[in-house]
Image (tube, rainbow, N blue to C red; front, top):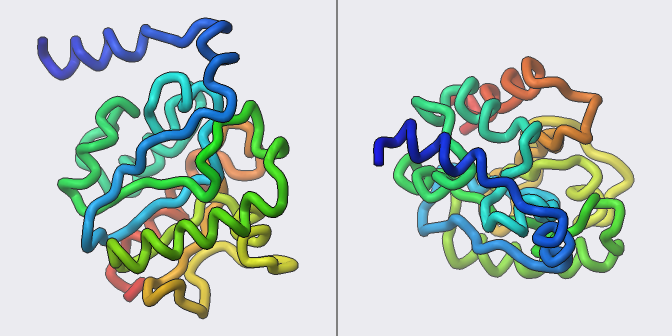
Length: 192
């Protein structure tokens, strides 16, 4: 099956209401390897992602288009092609690995525990940059009152820290063109 046909077949297989309901509290496998350029850290899997087993899978999520348009990938990957990110030196994990309909369902202590689990991963895999996709989640995890978008002055377990807006379609504050601009800033060599 060609890549185009395969992508079309996968994108038409949407989870049913029953499958979405069954995905509550289900986690996702990390897309991770040693020595990544960037480890992207999502807030938590939505039900659509938990049901499909793919990060940022819900139609309308802007992660994959922003990643491509910012130059991280030569083609826009389908969520089912997430493992291809590793070949380019990028990975994905979540702050809280529990599927919910919205991040508002998460408890504050889940973010702190998620930060502790993430610290273990960062020490083990040693990515150059850890990019948090969600300002609020970053602030909850590190018990901060606020944080700006972009590179942060502190490091996390030896990795540079970047904070970017959540690419979720529920985040109306940042549209795709602005997300692309922010993702592109992360990708540029000046980040080092």
